[in-house]
Image (cartoon, rainbow, N blue to C red; front, side, top):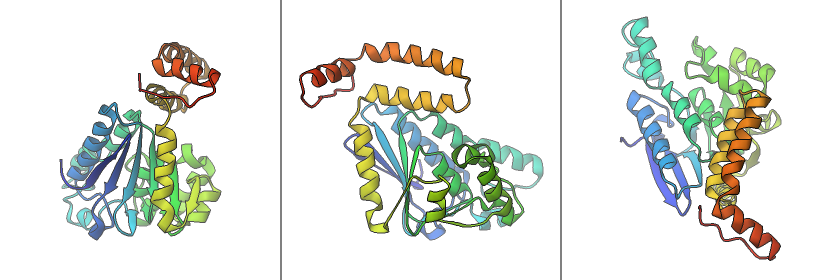
Length: 267
């Protein structure tokens, strides 16, 4: 693993921090993608983790792709000819959304600054988005004569709806935090100094719940974005059958009936 992502574990919460402040946390090279993927895999493999937070170091969440790397043809974008560029996209940046979709741990984006291009899509890949009042958002690929090469055209419209996604992708316009709140791109806007406290508080509320059911609930939500109702009902029945047999479910019922706080073990 490289140094693009800092990893911290606080109890049942993992904090992932994009750590290239001199580049506004832009994804510059394939290794940056692999660092993020490996960190997400680490979070998912740790049964003690029940919630995660993704944020950025410095004044930006992520400014997207590294334009200098694109110009020099040595980053996550163009290489020597279109065939190798296509392979470059498929082998690195396009693996990032797949890693997020495979993650069954709920993840919160704490958006501390600019979330531009790929950075905006990274935020959308998280389950819950909390923004600093200083945050800015844009699907700005078109401004560079490009299209969302990382799956953003699929992702963004599932967050804000087709019309708003089309507006963002086709204009490339910048949104303020309040505009992002109004269109549902984020769920909460807070003052910059309160951002991590709010994100951690949200993560703690999530992580306080039964661990196995949390992961099943997130998988069900992700599946339901694309599946038919019949598929979701069948999956719900199967998952619920498992959930009913967990020790945490039995503890929750006993605690409710005995009018006491539940003591969950993750079993």
